[in-house]
Length: 180
Image (cartoon, rainbow, N blue to C red; front, side):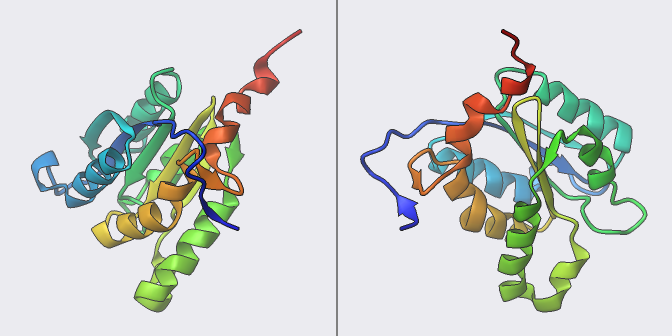
């Protein structure tokens, strides 16, 4: 049965948050604030937090830095997943994916549909893995971040979650790079 197994040990995950916005500052970033608070309340570690303009090169550069940083296990982005001219988060980040987590987008849209109906189609939320780092791109709304965190990430980033979770496979994400 799915759920938290209290007999298992909790393992804190080091998570970086990146907000994409041309109109907000960190002081006005309610989605980033929500994610930072939720990460801390869950017992995880905030590895870094930044806000950047909707610029493919800037976004990719920051995320590449984090996926190459051994002190970051997971990156969560918020914003830029729509399809207006300035929404470039998937274009910036998907090329970095070594493996896409298709089920993340599917489950996100299922959860989102329950709250916003067919408006969920306006999000290109996605997830993937690169250099042993999980990456999840969420819409910019605080509600969407809450849906993704509470409905998916909170459980999958908890080593006690059964029947399986992302944390237990983290040590194996880079096994294809090992020789001998």
